[in-house]
Length: 347
Image 1 (cartoon, one colour):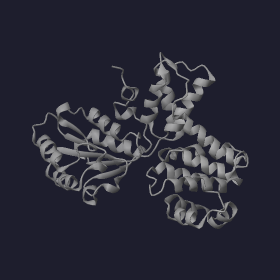
Image 2 (cartoon, one colour):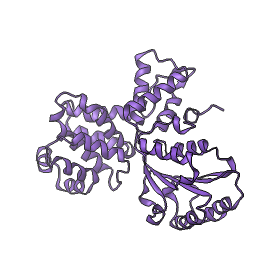
Image 3 (cartoon, one colour):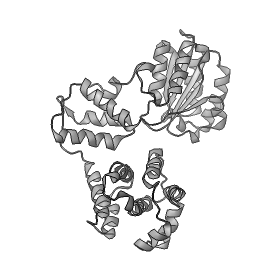
Image 4 (cartoon, helix red, strand yellow):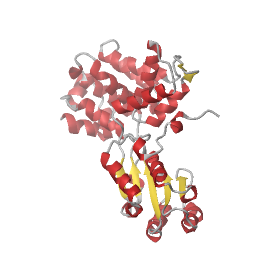
């Protein structure tokens, strides 16, 4: 069976990781130096930012016996039954290490009953067991459980560190990149996947054949092509707003997040970019409208919105008058999170 590159290059020790927050590295080093310092923790942040890797690296550095480390996928095993039958038994069993660690991945999926039980277990087994939770968003974690843990916010790598890590893997694998087409494919994968490093490495593996990069376009590359036509074609007066709206309706709702990333990656390369931000807002608003009641859950998307529109001076009224946006659309946009971010930044 072919080894997954992400697992192959997953850091095994704390020193091997790229730490966005150096304070967390010092905290984990403190855990290693003195087991009594180890706290139960909630590691929260976007996918692919090293939350699970950090816990596994800690376990390795602590040299915890395999039988003293329990990892549970809470997206599957998330109920009180799992806590009673698996976790409690694990905590009660004789240990071969000075400390045991229980890791719940995707802990936001734990039921309320399960979280209430864990709140008690953290106290009852505080002498020899620590509980670690990873999640993309800690809003679904009960406050009573949070109060018994240290909450650590893991943020995305900066784009340079992200890019460097991917290139290191490519070089370590002896993959040859010699043509502009091969460079374009790798660049496309990096831009599409950022900031999720796990996703990027997995998608990179899909295009590697016999130590070379397959330059045939992935199936969903057409989505990015549509976005190019939609956003930049319109902004350069190559298509009308009606055509832009038609293209929006052709893009699957789940793919509209590509619009945000694509804008951020490319809008600054356009001439007179400062003068077209109002147009960009319109494109985004139309995309938001099509997404209906779905909330933007990816924090990266919100960050991108802020960065793109931080210098823009267009107001809602100006946009409505300029593009003849209907009142119902305006009312809908005003309720959407993106518009709230925009009005805070551009008014």
